[in-house]
Image (cartoon, rainbow, N blue to C red; front, side, top):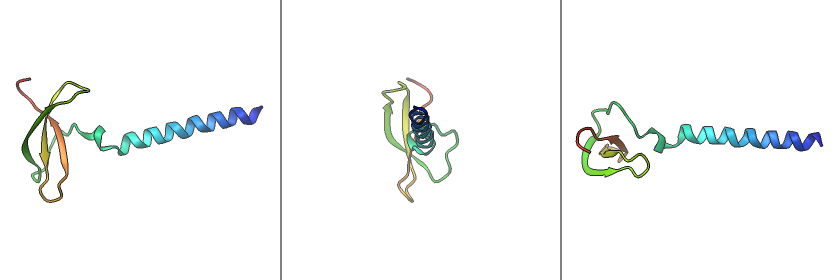
Length: 76
């Protein structure tokens, strides 16, 4: 009966580990960038984030195509 408890604890620890790891690696959680490097240029793409209901603008790095979504200040 002890092994069932150990197995459950192991599974919970494993799930927590991968959940925390994915939160650190997932780019969607890094969308609120405070300082953009000089390589990023603003685009005409502006949208309202469906989850946070915040207006965001897309910035793109023309060298490698990387995109960053930053909160748009000003009118809502």
